[in-house]
Image 1 (cartoon, rainbow, N blue to C red):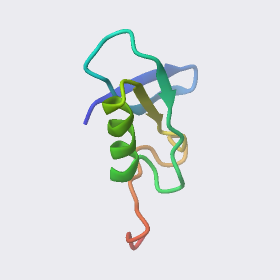
Image 2 (image 1 turned 30 degrees about the vertical axis):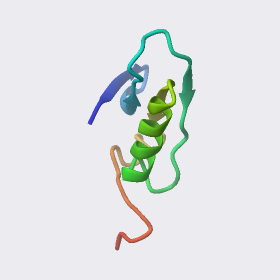
Image 3 (image 1 turned 45 degrees about the horizontal axis):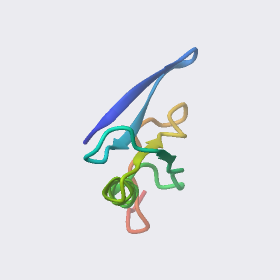
Image 4 (image 1 turned 60 degrees about the vertical axis):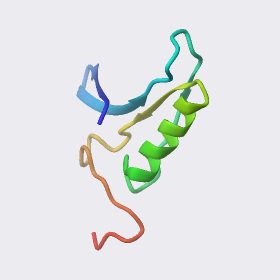
Length: 76
């Protein structure tokens, strides 16, 4: 899974990133839902990359529980 570690004054957090095949592409930020950066969000980023965008999805809940990955079918 292509991830970036982004440094902040509070520590590092991860973000999923999908790159298009060409360089110099515009970028979009994909905001995660309550389920974290799950398969659906990674597929969304990948679809944007197929449309010639760099797509970045940051882990917004990293301070509470980093790298959580749930779905509407997850017991937790």
